[in-house]
Amino acid sequence: EDLVQQMHDDLYDGLKEEVEEGVHILLERGWEPYRILTEALVEGMRIVGIDFRDGILFVPEVLMAANSMKGGMNILRPLLAETNAPKVGKMVIGTVKGDIHDIGKNLVSMMMEGAGFEVVDLGINNPLENYLAALEEHKPDILGMSALLTTTMPYMKVVIEGMKEQGLRDDYIVLVGGAPLNEAFAEAIGADAYCRDAAVTVDTAKDFMQ
Ligand code: B1M
Image 1 (cartoon, protein in one colour):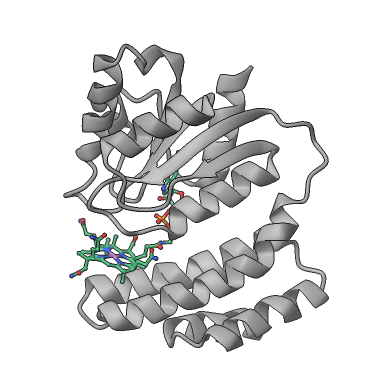
Image 2: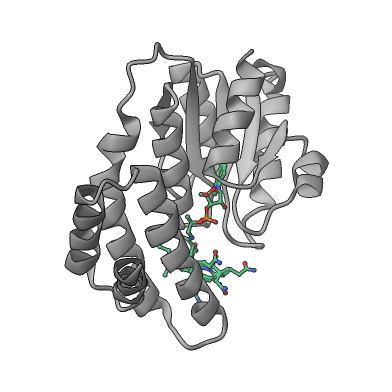
C-alpha cells in the first residue's frame, strides 16, 4: 500500500499529524487496529532504528519519530483495549532504572489490556523500590520489566534479587522484554520468561495464568 509507505516516511520525518491522519484513513478503510500498529507504526519505527544505529538519524529526530508513533498509538489504544472479557489477571510493568525507552512497554500494556489483563504502568526509569512498592500496593499476578539498552538490562537482575531478599520472588510471575534481551539472559537472571514482542507477552502471560 502506498499509504503505509507514506506513513513510514512521515514517521521517519517526525510528522505526527500526518501519522495520525494515516491511522484514521486506514481505520476508515477497514484495517484491523493490530494490523495498523504492526505494519504502519512498528515497521516504521524499525526503519528509524536502523538509521539511528547507523548514525544517519540523531536523538532529536528519533524523539520526533517516537512522538509521532505515540500519536498513532493513542488513536489505536482504545480500539485495542476494547474487550468485554472478564479480567484474566493483573500486571505491573515498568521500564528499568536508567532507561527512558517506553514505546515497546506501552505497546505491551495496550495489548495486555486488550487481552483482558488489568495493567498498572509504572512508566520509565524505575529503581527497585518502585517495583517493590507497586507489588505491595497492587498485588499483581505478573511483574513485567522492559529495557532497551545493554547497559540497563542488567538492572532487571537487581530487581529480581531484591524480590528474593524480601522473600517475594515466588509470589509473582516475572516476564521481561526489550530488544537487546534473549531467552538465555532471562534464564540467567532468574526471570520466568523472555517475551520477544507484545503478542508473545500476551500468550506467555495467558499460559502462566492457567
Ligand atoms: Co534509543 N537506543 N537511545 N532512543 N532507541 C535504541 C534502543 C538502540 C538499539 C538504537 C541503535 O543504536 N540502533 C540503542 C541501544 C544500543 C544498545 O544498548 N546496544 C539506543 C541508544 C544508544 C540510545 C541512547 C543512549 C542514545 C544517546 O543518547 N546517545 C539514548 C538512551 C536514553 C536512555 O534510555 N537513558 C536513547 C534515546 C532514545 C530516544 C529518547 C531518542 C527514543 C526513545 C523515545 C521513547 O521511547 N519514548 C529512542 C528510540 C525510539 C530508539 C529506537 C530507535 C526504537 C525503540 C522503539 O521504540 N522500538 C531503538 C532502536 C531499536 O530498538 N532497534 C533505540 C519500537 C518498539 C515497539 O519496540 O521497544 O523493542 P521495542 O519493544 C518491543 C519488544 O522489545 C517487546 O515488545 C515490544 C513490542 O512488540 N518488549 C517487551 C519491550 N519491552 C517489553 C517488556 C515486556 C515484554 C516485551 O515485559 C513483559
